[in-house]
Image (cartoon, rainbow, N blue to C red; front, side):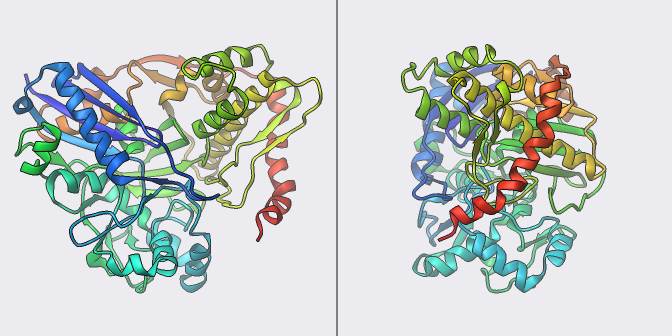
Amino acid sequence: MKYTLGIDIGTFESKGVLADQTGKVVAQSSTPHKMLVPQPGWAEHRPDEDWWGDFVTITRDLLAQSGVAASDIAAVAASAIGPCMLPVDAEGRPLMNGVLYGVDTRAHAEIDLLNAEIGEGTILDRCGNALTSQSVGPKILWLKRQRPELYAKTARVLTASSYLTFRLTGEYVIDHYTAANFSPLYDVTTQDWCDDLAPDIIGLEKLPKLMWSSEIAGEISDAAAAETGLAAGTPVLCGTIDAGAEALSVGLRAPGDMMMMYGSTIFVIQRTSERVTDPALWYAPWMFPGEHVSMAGLATSGTLTHWFRDQFASDLDTDTAFATLTEEAAASPPGAKGLLVLPYFSGERTPIHDPHAKGVIFGLDLTHTRADIYRAVIEGIAHGTAHVIDTFRDAGQAPLRVLAVGGGTKNGIWLQATSDIGGVPQVISRSSVGASLGDAFLAAVAVGLATRDDIQTWNPPEQVVEPVSHPAYDKAGPLFRALYTQTRDIAHALGAP
């Protein structure tokens, strides 16, 4: 029996699985870490502690749990939060903390500058994506403008997954799916790096080599073997973003399939038959040549529930707090007794792409309880998600099948509210392990232990959540969107220096 190892580095937690060639998970492990917020609008991880340290800890735990010999592991694949921005020196040593994906909005001035210099239409046409807080190019320009001493020492700019692959193999690589988020440095037509749009951001030689997620980047080095317990020479895949691996884990395969990831943010990936150009959505080549996806994401979802727990439920036991809060919220009716929450606590990504948006709890009176407010928080995230689904519909890409995955699917109120407000059934697969299982599956495909269709046996569908109509949601939907429009100027003024 041969095995594959998959490890995923998330926003607040890293997870890993060891699976045999039939898809049976023989061991799984996880370890928490923190998202650092050194100032409003910033979000960071420590690359050696939170990324590589977690990888080493989980790998050793999986080997110890399973008793599997390292020599029986046929391949290793890793995914991670992305797209990130990590400058490293000539030896591959990090020069600063990793700057996270769209939840980090520090580069809004650079986005405005690049849009003015290049033109928003040109960027969308060449890069397939409008510049947003999800884009890595403006964050590299932020580094150049705001941290020139670190920029001068930068030999490579990596993401979380490419840093892991470097630590494992010594190779600087990045997958096309991740690279498409480097606008305006990636041309989606040529599927290659480009510097003609913005020649002054960084030299292309400082960007990693482009590969497909399903390709093998190298082998476990002697140094990595000594740290992780893996066998030197074991094949290592290029790696990818966690959401991509998560989508693979629940069977996203055909055009019209939409993956809905319930994590620290809501992230959506939909397979399309061709490239979709829409300024509200992100585009990327998929993990395999010749395939396309469109994407969207909220800025705060699970992160917002964590904030609520920490600020308003400190009386509850941390291990059971979410279960208790959900039980309380179940006693509040749909519509949370007239409350509306804008979940824009870190600005917002899709579809409004407003880094200056603010969180709002609206409609409070003296009869409202913690249960009502927590339910309204969950429903606010669901309203934001429905806005995303409608954006896909408006782009001519109404989902044919929605595949839900992630820790948030364990929250029945959140799951049902998303179906009810968004008007879509959601398919839940047997395993909610998520991205790390997708990594293990991708590794199995890469070395010939599985085919892509085998995901149906690795992780078959098990449940469908059907939408239910509620008059309270019908009323609240338009009001949710109007609340943002009517408070936007106030929110921007509050955030102004």
